[in-house]
Image (cartoon, rainbow, N blue to C red; front, side, top):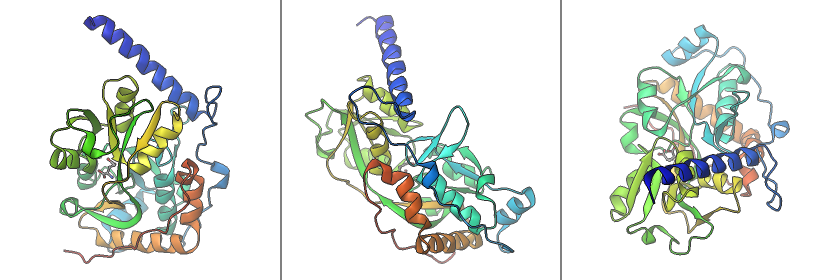
Length: 309
Ligand code: GLU
């Protein structure tokens, strides 16, 4: 195919894919496709703002307190988890609710949280240089990352999965990826796992998974790989075009990323998560967001209050 024609086709298909996603996001799927369920704002819990909070041991909390609001890093293109409405600039999703409920426990009005989009590859740097107070965005806790940042939680456990086009027959699991183009986000654990454990797959890495999904819809790649929690959201938006295949092939416990030295903030966030799991907020938030993709609320994983090192 001549290059210019190819590019034109790609652009047209890309625009189509984005239109489909946008339409689906607006709740008006194409005729014949099931209505797509977005997060249900009206069902979201109202989190009680804790009074007289003081965290003298946390430099991060003190700076936020002086500023009057928290700045929280998040994703903006992950349906049901962290999604930004381009018209209003509002963020929604399960991760966003985790950020809001924990903010309330730290004494901040949850509506005052300022979200800042940070891609997978830039999370550690953003926490290290103080761009954000904490990060809630499908962030897997692991020992390597713990050398650079701290983690409260986990508050959810996902697992790596594969998203393919509906007409795909050859890819049923990670063992079928030899010679296939597999797209993931740079700096993510799923991308690292493909390079380490499935070296015969052709890994294509972008900043975000939504670019991968556009590339999948336009036949530039054969599969997208990341956490099932993220892939479920994309599949739900274009159910006629995309499907998840196989079983989860990793464990991805999600944590709240904090600056590494700030154990006071980390432990306060652990307390906050435990309290919201106990009082029903966690489950209600799940059901109004990620649960809309069809999976009932699981038991949250046990929180790991590890000692400072
Ligand atoms: N949970 C994985 C990670 O933290 C994949 C999702 C993401 O990139 O945010 O790397």
